[in-house]
Each structure stands twice: as C-alpha cells, then as structure tokens.
Amino acid sequence: MLSIVPFLDLRRCVYGAAFTALRLRRCIYGAAFTVLRLHHPTYSTAPLTMFLKLSGQRPTNLGVTKGQLAPCPSSPNCVSSQADSSDAVHYIAPLALNGIKAGAAIAQLQAIIAALPRTTVIEASKTYLYVEFTSQLLGYVDDVEFFVDNKAKAVQVRSASRLGQSDLGVNRKRIETIRRQFTPGS
Image 1 (cartoon, rainbow, N blue to C red):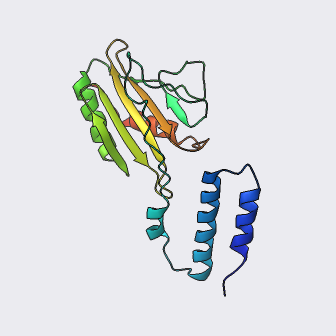
Image 2: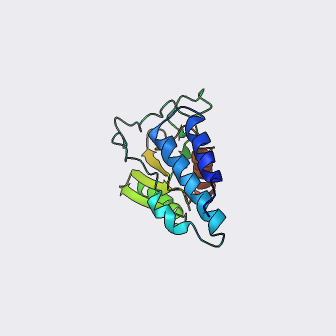
Image 3: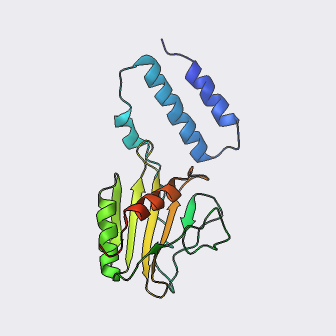
C-alpha cells in the first residue's frame, strides 16, 4: 500500500514558500525519493539522478572581456577575485603566479582539476580555462573560470552556481582547495 506521508510533505513543500517551477520540481523529486525509500529500502536512487539534473543553461557572458571575467550576480552563490575586495560575500583572492608563465599555470590548473570528481573542461587556452563542476546528488552545475592576468601577476578566478540562491560555501571551498594544490614554480 502506498503511503500518503510523502504527498502531504509535497503539499507542505509546495505551499510553504513562494511558488516557482524549480521549487515544484525539487518538491516532486523529494517526494519520489521518499516513496522509493519507504517502499524499497534497498533500492538505489542513483539511476534516478540521471533524470534529476539541475544543470541550468550555460551562461553566455563567460570569458575574458577587456581583462575582466564576468561580474558575480547579487546572489551569494558566486566568488570572484575581481569583485570589490570590500565585498566579503563575493571577493576571493587571486592565485599568485610567482613568476611562472601563463601556459604553465593553466597546465598545472588543468592537472589539478583533472584529479577532481565530476569536472568537464569546456575551454582552455594559454591564458584562460573554463571548467564545469557537477554536484553528485542532483547534478547542479557550477561554472569556474581561471584567467592568467600578466599585469597583476596572478590568476584571476571566478566560480559561480548556475541555479539557486545559496551554494553553502561550495564555490569558495572549491577555489581554496585548488589554491592549496596550486604551487607556482613546480
């Protein structure tokens, strides 16, 4: 017999806050996972995640324009080394070059990123790298850019979630993880 509990939760979820199509979709998926777990406790929900990809559309404003990466939106799910340094929500320090050439920096970043899970390099040149990171559970996609800024002797970075309001600090943590592994001159 099918339990009514997930559907009551679904109703509470849908009517609990401002209605949006994305919110409805999340509520429905949550109810579906609950039904599967209640009636098939050994069933893996992994095959369903291929239908639950919340990737959004690839932004059209990415890349370097006049030495600048795209600015962060007002939502707190983006960090950028080119944001105003007084903006504690969006600003993150660039990666230091310490005298290495642009091509070597990008190659090292590509090697670091290749070792990270669920990454796809979309564009790479001697001075620019664009990578998509996909979350494991629902397939959220974050767009991450690196730009070797020879004037500033640094690698400018930008990491932004495509969907949602908050990323729970994931973009900042990702850049800091890459920073720890990025060793100029090696």
